[in-house]
Image (tube, rainbow, N blue to C red; front, side):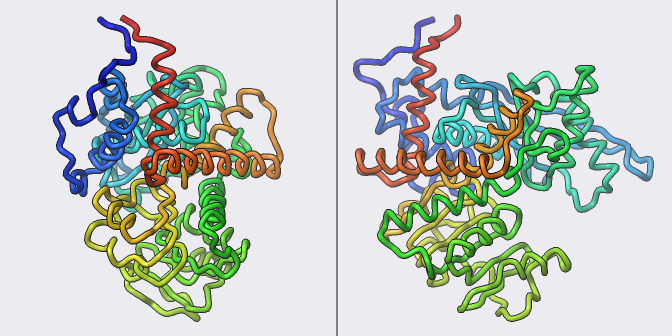
Length: 439
C-alpha cells in the first residue's frame, strides 16, 4: 500500500469520485450537502486524491439496537447511531441527539462537520456524532434514562477521554450527560469525568459551557459587522430558533447594543419593529414553554422571519432551512449560522450573488465545542477556571479563528464557507501527511 504523499498532478475531487458539480446536489441530504462544500474546497486546494478518499470516509459507523422496558412493562427497541469521522488530530468529539428524525446520513454529516469545526478553531479533537431515533416528548424521565444508559453500554467500546467524548445536542442536556458519565464510570469501576462534556458543574462541568455556542455567535457577528464597516449598536437582528443557542445569542447581542426584532421556535414567530426585550421573552418561555403569545409583539409566519429587512439573520434551529426556495428573498447583510447546516449548497450561491456575508456553521457555532475542549482540559487536570477566564479564552480563540478564515477567503477570493473548509481540510490533511498511512 502506498504512503499518502503529495501527487505532482493531483486529481480533482470530482475526478476521484465521478461527481458532477450540479449546485443542487445535496439540497435534501445533509451528508451530500456537507460533501458538496468539502469537494469544492478540496478541489481549490488540489488535495491529493489519496488524502481526499481518506478524509471523505468516516472512520467508524456504529448502529446499535437499544431495547428498554417501558413504564407499562412493554419492551420497545430503538435504533442508535455513533459515527467517528476522523481522529487524526485527537479524540473524536460530538454531541448525541434524541429525535425521531435521526438518520445515519444526518449523523455522518454532523460528525464530519465536527471534524472541520474543531480544525477551524484549531483544538485537538476530531469529529463524531451520535443519536437515538426516539421521541423524547413521549418518554418519561425514567424511560429516557434507560435509553441513555442502554445506548451508552452499547457504544461503550468507542467511548473514552482519549477516544470519543460525547456532549449534549438536540433533546439532550446536562442530565443525559450525567447518566452517560455514570454508566461509563460504573463499567470502568471509577469516576471518569472527562468522558463527556456539557455535564452539571457539580460533576466536573465547565462554567460558561451552557452559553458558549450562543456567545461564539455573538462574537463572530460583531467581527463580521466590523469587517463590513457596519454599526454594531442599533443593528437589527432576527433569530430563528429560541432554544439554548438562539436565546443566549439573542440576549448577548442585545447586551452589545443590537436590536433583536424577531425570534421564533416550533410554535411560531414573534416580531416587534422597535425590538423585543429578550430577558422578558426568556421568562415568558420558562412559564409558557413557547414564544407564541408573547405580549407587546406581533405574530408572524416562521418563514417570514427569514426574509425580514434586518442587518443580521441568525438561523439557530435545524438543518436546511435556507434553500433555493427562499434564499433569494433574504435581505440580511450578515447571516450567522447558529445551527448546523442551515443553508443548502444551492442557497449559498444565491446568497453570495446578492452580497450576503455568511458566517458558516463550522465557525459561527464553534463556541460550544471550544468550551467543551476547555471542560475536557479542566477535568483531566482536576483544576477548574472561573467564568471570566473561560469567556476570555473563548473570545480569543473565536476572534482569531474568524480572522484566520477571513484571511483565507481574501487570499483565494472565495466566500467564508469555502475558506473555512479550506482551512480545516488543510489542517487535518497536514496531520495525515505527517502521520503517514499505517499498513
